[in-house]
Image (tube, rainbow, N blue to C red; front, top):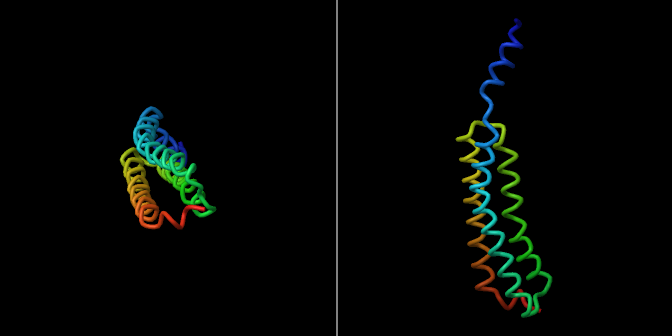
Amino acid sequence: MSQTDARAAASARRTTPTWLIATIAGALGLFYAYAAWNALGNLLQAAPLGLNALGWFVWIFAIVFPLLVWAGAFALGYKRPPHHLLLVMLTGLALVAVFWLNVVAYTTLNTASLLA
């Protein structure tokens, strides 16, 4: 058996089970979904007031951003060990939380600039 075959066999033994990847990504994905769902709720609440282009952009981006970050964190972490996936997903969630606070602060302080 060559050295390359031995390395391939060793790496095959160390793969993370799919159920563990799905559990980590799914459990933390619920928090990402909560952020997106909140943004959708706020968009539906603000839409009858008459949003301008900036208002639509802010709220639609606030819906899409958590989904993009989740997808990026999953793409970065799913081939790594489970604790690395967990840390990458938590880091992405922290990024979404900071972004959400920025959106809430901006829309609260500059409501007139978002309305038509």
